[in-house]
Amino acid sequence: MRRAVRALPLGRGRDVLRGLWIGHPMHPALVQVPIGAWTSAAVLDLLPGQSRAARLMVALGLAGAGPAALAGWVDWAEQRPPQARVGLVHAAANITAVAAYAGSLAARLKGRPVLGRSLGFTGLTVATVGGILGGHLAYRQAAGVNHAEAVPRLVEPGWHRVGALTEFPAGEPVRRMADEVPVLVVVIPEPDGEADRVHVLADRCSHLSGPLSEGKILDGCVECPWHGSLFRLSDGANLHGPATSPQPAFDSRVTADGQVEVRITPPR
Image: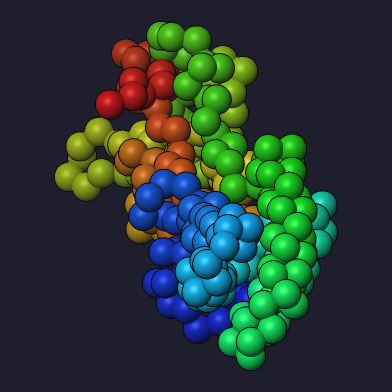
């Protein structure tokens, strides 16, 4: 199933569905359309003379379920096995809810309002269970959260030595410790005898804590070895998902005795 989702010809739309452009996953935002519409339909079903409005809300929820599901599957394909197992049950609950609402809409259109309402309330119940599982994924299993968010608070203010400049091979990723936080150090040589540039990022990927120091350096960026997220070395900006959050970046300097020192870049 992972291979099938990854093989979908989504192109740049994959990062759009991941939420790279807004800085956090899109799936939780997209599910507001079906959940909101179906909840509204349930309320309207309890009121007299609102059958047409309830039918429209059911249809709106079904229309919104497709994009929400696609975004969810794109996220699911890059999750750890324990997360993926819960995610699969979460998806199964949502598919069941969609099937119930599709039956509800069909029954309403055929003039069977009692069956339509019954299937609607069933669908809402199952969708609620799916939502609870989604909350478990996000808040208990940390799927989709920024795994590097705490770095600026874990590093003490000021400069921290991470080693001599001669210890870092040009263009190669090296793991060091700044205070108690692992960092990635990459030295990029400059032409014409200028001072080498020293780039430093938090080592653990913001997506699922992959070790960036084991990744590839590609055109001024580092690629996470676990899921392929791409971060710019100069400032930690993420250029390609599945990560949606930037990587914490560090200022760097080389002292007179050739030691590399780093400090967390102040937030802008």
